Length: 287
Ligand SMILES: [Zn+2]
Image 1: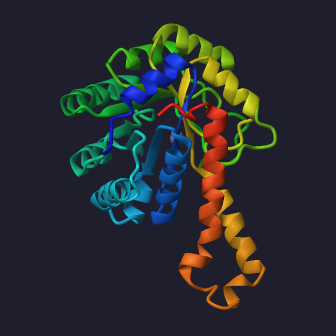
Image 2 (image 1 turned 180 degrees about the vertical axis):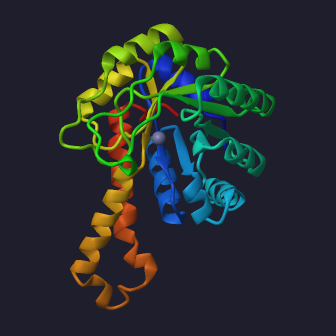
């Protein structure tokens, strides 16, 4: 059964570790992440972007697939199904479809509008027992072209949004989605520290987890980060393993073209990546 991310993240914040959000794209992705979480007895958050939701034929398809897998694979660890960077409309659709957690990314709105829309969603999520993630200070990405560092959130604005009653808060601290540029300035720990001072026990979320060095991840966790989003890293691992299989000509040998064989190395690569992250985040054995 799907659960809200609230309890797992409050526990993580108190216990000074982080729960990974791993974004899913299809059946193989979902199965690899769920099985790894179960093997390692780690709580887990499955992230679904609006684009990935569309790709997987809509939110109700995603909910059906995930619930079916939890049941058929005998998954006992806490699993939250979470909308990643949702629009206001997208969040409402996911709530209706049966997601257990949503992110409303109002970071591109003026702060007053971000607050108004977040408030409405806080009310809906509270009524239904779902977790809600809000964002302050847009997190940069490769679609914006060349960037030296991601945006840095205003700690006072973070407090304003945290006080609305959201479950967890994503704040830009120089992190970026996708691959980090060579000249990246690193995470702003002063900002993170200031945000934590003002938001207290609120679990903080670090987006763009791919390529942030392990020591920075651990420092971020020590300063209140309790949820870390991983997306690109699983994609890179899957692509590399699939490339290796094809380049070795294995799809041309015997029944190597069978999708269950063709996709197996990528599946294993996702499992290995998720395991590595859960170990780094400290969530192993915390379910
Ligand atoms: Zn993000």
